[in-house]
Image (cartoon, rainbow, N blue to C red; front, side, top):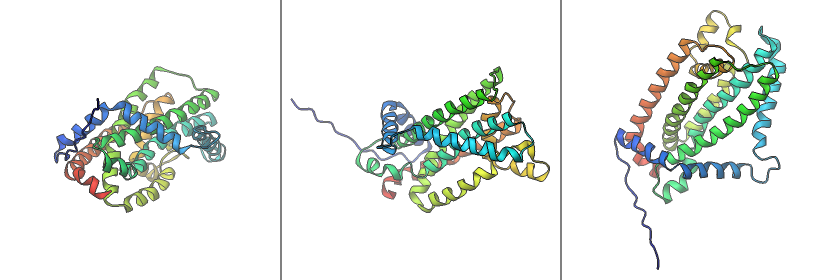
Length: 275
């Protein structure tokens, strides 16, 4: 007795509802994109003796180096600056990592897009799942670091939960959007790579906003990445995030989703031809 399975390739709907239908269909295939993510992590560190431990090692070395060197240029307490760097760098890596990963989320899945009819969002969720895994490892190390310098939990830490939700919502929209744009215009990934290197220096990671005054402080507020980092880091440092940061984050998140939905509804069906 033989069983045949027919895979029907459907043309993606050219509508915003089709975009959200694709997101929903992909989200329901949890086991598939989670398996893809884990397999990719294994392949990346294949034949490495320490494996994924390199993620934690690289993070710890960066935090230690920055804390030792740059603490001399801040007026803040040493323990405060260590927590500032440890938590902020983990959040920054997740945010910027999703932007850069988005540039290759579809081009890196070219074989899958061409060979089998799957929701495009599968590849987005796979990439985000990998980012969450990396964030979890880095936050685990961050927890050890901040506890060692005297951090104590408080109820204000719960404000990090809506921040995490916003991070995940942004990751879905920005990866889908950047994936489509980069599939059509391959130079975008190189441009993004260049810009993200600069972001580390203009986002309060190596320095704190409390050390800025006047115009420089105002200029920092034009960097949306700084506000995303703030809503995540401030609660974990037992501080209330600024209302300005939450306002910027909400507005930017809504705009990103609108742009992603419009772009996806217009060009999503052309993705296979661009790859």
